[in-house]
Length: 424
Ligand SMILES: NC(=O)c1ccc[n+]([C@@H]2O[C@H](COP(=O)([O-])OP(=O)(O)OC[C@H]3O[C@@H](n4cnc5c(N)ncnc54)[C@H](O)[C@@H]3O)[C@@H](O)[C@H]2O)c1
Image 1 (cartoon, rainbow, N blue to C red):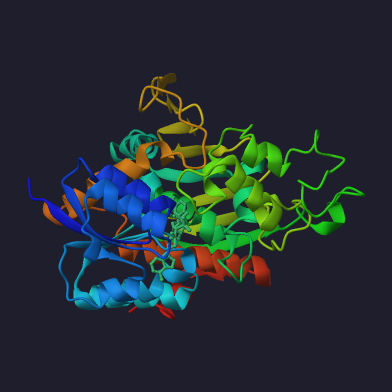
Image 2 (image 1 turned 45 degrees about the vertical axis):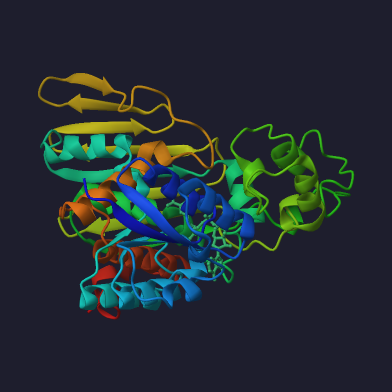
């Protein structure tokens, strides 16, 4: 087995997850760049990276001539473009976090430049590599559904997850990160297109921010939960419960600080001084808390997608074909197939157990799955339509941008026309 040398740009939550998986999968992490010393140290100690290969910024790391096989780029959304373009120029093959970039222009630039330079690039659409979705894809590819006519897919964000990421956290404000459809659901639009097996032609979308705004703040609620909120006991979003006491047990405690293993004191400081401690009705969030998208495909098939904050969380999908139907419940990790000919049900549980309910999650095995696929893609020259290569990923990103444009402009968007503006 060839060992693939990896450089890591951005040693935050995602960068650590991928490189942790890489330890026993044929990779060697040889350099890291991150602004935060404790995060660089974590990578240095976990992977025995030498001191002179630990850099504060990606610019320093990528100023060296190419010395490894793969660049993993896991910086925040607005910071993918510059390191990705530089890494392509240097000739690195790349694992790039999603979303590819916050604008259609930047997404297209990256795809076009990667094509021009002939570098291999996978985008972290980890759900494609989760056994739950691969099992559904296998049913479709085996012809058990006949021709797929319609897909109904729900991304149930979870009310606490919404408050953490899209009201208080990194993805709450369009200007600072991106629209929520792109940030959260570029995965789902990608999955829908992958299962349908052909290009999206038209989209239409509605949605808005309805609940997490100042007018819904209960009377007398202070700006910060820690300042003695009279609704502390009954509020689902009390920051003390979520971050300090970790009552929902969805991994938020680790996420609200920049530290690898935060103490109670670290968290109390965060709750006093950052938006993670703020009343959910008084943050500077502007992204939607519910949105629907209708999609039409080249084969005449259609899909309806629903992303909503107000639920426990998880994904649910119904795929309807001419010979059968699938209903998938990602929370229970069950897939129920109904065969029209035999009029019988068949139920499977792809990994044999219910999935974890955390934000860190592992994406139902997809985080490890993409690392395994990356190895085969680079070392074994794997090439097939199951891979989330940059070209197909950007096509699906463009469908997502088109859907957001539809929501904002209240009109149906012809995706094929929209794409022509960007892709070479
Ligand atoms: N694939 C998925 O399912 C999934 C899930 C969550 C997040 N994400 C995406 O992954 C990306 C990273 O998210 P995260 O939660 O790990 O964020 P994070 O903030 O924990 O990590 C980003 C890291 O980049 C570092 N950084 C910033 N500027 C830098 C620079 N100039 N040079 C080097 N490092 C720099 C930061 O210090 C930070 O440690 C985001 O784009 C996010 O949207 C993807």
